[in-house]
Image 1 (cartoon, rainbow, N blue to C red):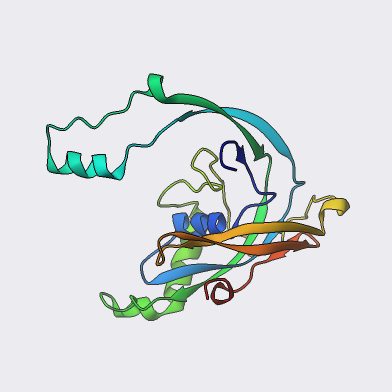
Image 2: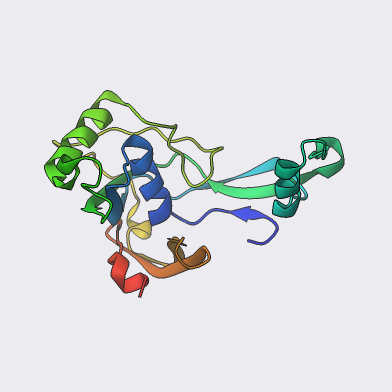
Length: 204
């Protein structure tokens, strides 16, 4: 929401993509989320957070880059604001995804066009708990743990009254090619699973 922070009922596809990219990403591939399986009951908690009222403007940053004597500063004591947040707690998800080879593959390394190469690297990194940066659930304050599941899937603890639910309009991802425009989709959960529509259906 505009002022107070309110979580979606479940993780968004863009946040799920961010987790996978934190484990393994190259310009040669792009991750696509297929579905999200909710494993824990959807529960919320209230928090209060300190935030800055304003951001340093891009114009001021560019000025400081050109002029070393220009003072680029903000005083937290003058800008601090307390805002309430309604956030999810104790969450767990199964993320089903695939990656696609981009047109940047093979320019520096001919083996980059081979999907099996990227899949093996991803599996090895995920099994070892390796990541380029700490994955998080939408915002950096809420870090995420991950593990690769190849055998028996964990049992869902989602109660029966939450398994089938229309979650309304949810953020799908940001269109970085068109002025960072937000793209949304109608999220519907059936038996605890959200089927994410194909990328091309949302980014027409």
